[in-house]
Every structure is written in C-alpha cells, then in structure tokens.
Image (tube, rainbow, N blue to C red; front, side, top):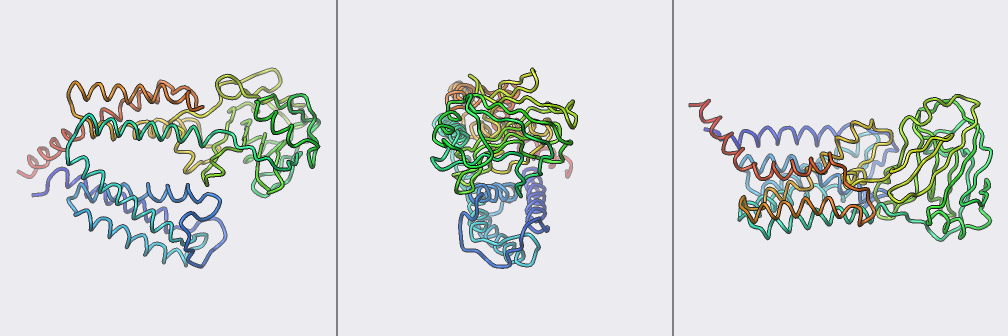
Length: 401
C-alpha cells in the first residue's frame, strides 16, 4: 500500500523532472557553443546561472525524498541526469554545456537531502533560529548586492545611442544635467565629479522630444565606462519609464533588476517635449515626468529572486506574486525546524520580526504588508507540514481500504 506522502512525492518528482527537462532541453536564443566548458561560474551572469541550476533540481530531489528514495541515490541520480543533459545540450541550438551546471544540479539535490536529514533529526528552538538567521542573511546579501557600484573609470555619456542589447530610441535628446552639471554625448569632462554626484543621489534631469512607443527598453540617456560597462540608463520600455543604475550584483555575476514607473509614458505622443527627472529620496528613488512624480521606487526583500532570473517588463501582478512567493519560501524552513510550543512561537515571531526590521537597515524598501503576510504563511505551512503528511496518509489509506 503506497502512503500519502509517497504518492505526493512521486507526483512532485514527476513534475520536477518535467520542469528540468523542459527548461534545459529546448532551443534558446543566443550563439551555439558546441563545446563543453570546464568553468564553474561562466560568463557575466555566472553566479545567477549557478544558483538557478541549484534551485532547478530542488523540486525533483524533494519529490524523491518524499518518495522514500535513499539520499545517496538521489544525489547520484541528479549528477547523472545533469551530466546527460549537458551532453545533449552540445547539439541543441542556443545552449551551452558547462561543468558548473553539473556541479550546481548535484549541489541542489545534496542540499535537499541534508535538509531532510536535519528536519528528521529533531525540531528545536536552536534549529529554528539558525533557519531564521539564514533568512536574515539572504536579506542582508540582497541589500548588499543591490547597492550602487560606480567604478572609478572614465565615463562616457550616450544620447539615444544605438546599443545592441537595447532598442534604439527614435526620439531626440535636448539636454542632460546631473546635479546641475551638463552631461554631453561622448567622454565626460569630469567622470569623478559625475560619479560623486550620482553616488550622492543628486537629480538627473533629461529633456527630450518623444519618439514612437517602443517594444522593449530603449535608452534616452545612458552612461558607460571605458571598460564598456553599463553605469546608468534612463529609458522607455513601452509605456514605462525605466531607471537602471549599476549595482554590485553586476560585479558578482547576478542580474540587475531595474526600477520602473509603470504607465508613466502612456500619454506621451511622438513630438511631445518630455521633462524627466530621477533622484534618490529617503526611501528609494523618485522619478518625475512633466510635473508628475512617483517616489518610493526600490527593491523589497522579496525581490531577491530577480537577482537570479530577472525578466524585464514583467507584469506588475506577476512580479508581486513572485515577491510574495519568495517571501513565503524565506521563512518556510523556520516553520519546518522549530518546535510547536511556546518557545517555537517566540522563535517564529522573532524570525518574522527580523524580516520586517532588517530590510530598511540593509538599504531595501520596508517590507510590504503582503510580503509579511506571505512570510507568515510560509511559517505556518512549515509548522503544519507534518500534520498534512499524516492527513494525506490517512486519506490514501482510507481510499485504498
């Protein structure tokens, strides 16, 4: 007779396998590598790719754990599957094969096995606090990665430049000033001064003649340095006004999520004169357009997922769901590891309070109420997980009996 947990595990493992194969064996845009690369963190986004591959194998490994498969076999299966996928990717357009992908997949499975063993060992206030500390570390690391990173190099202003990674903006720039100092098209006369003014959050004022609506991000004004690194972008993405400032994430091999005022350009028509302003406020950034202003733009703790896989122009609703989903997963381990008693309740409250209090300290936006509720839901799901498994066993046994 198959138990309820095992039945759930088989279903989760099957879904996890389908997810792995679907995301790794389909053709993708980009140059074909055709060779196996022996690097662990490959390319400009090496760390984000590595983390993504770790997470990709978590559902499959979790399903196998719930199915009762031995831990060593799960890790070995993940290694073998990842190796076979990398071999297959040698013949798939747009895919590249690396040692890092195999290591990341194996690590993801191993972490699930280790977590299951720790959970099975015992619940305790100490284990819950360690899980809470891990969640706080993720928030602190997110704040660190999303701080500005402005290299002390020679900077170049770019007026509606035709850059390969962006759409070309078919409008016309009239003037640009940072902290009252004009910025031209070409090498900046005072890169050090511009860097200081940008770091201080002084206002960037752009006057332009609007072009046609864009299909993707198109810079009105941008700054790059002598090493061809993106420093700053102010641009239009369909109806959205977008601000990008280089973050430490770029130095770490992670994605850089942008800041956007959704719908700000919806009323703009080709030939209109646009007066744009971007500056850093007390809590996040402010963007202004023709007398209107939107402040409080920034990154909440739940936006950490965007460092691993950022999708420009994602609908606001989808972005909010991902933010809340990450917030729930952040405290799920605390619920799984803490004891269900008075001390455990205190630990859970401390963990949740840390999520609320730590974000502004590390430079993130105050955690929204929806994300706090999602974190509380993650805690609750962890606390109820054993009872849910027992209930599933009883339901399946009753159905079979």
